[in-house]
Length: 122
Image (cartoon, rainbow, N blue to C red):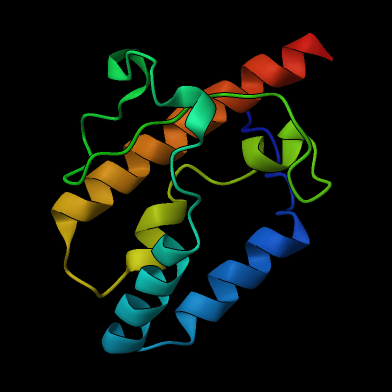
């Protein structure tokens, strides 16, 4: 049995991986903090919801993922699905924050599951 050929990475995903590969530990940590600061605050429409089903418990800091089918940077769900499952490990290589890596990987897998659901609706 032969393995299926690897799909090429979307250019924007490859660009992020190249960006992080070129950095040292401190630079990577600062870049991750900058990415985190870009996250949207909890939208008002979700504030009254029971957030429990949306929580990613593997994250050390509370993170809730509310799936919505909407245009994000003009990218289809397949772009999210093309992110390699070891993306977080590649980005965080050399940082030494295994607990954070676990949470971010869980977050990525949740996003991929939501993208898969969205793609099925198309």
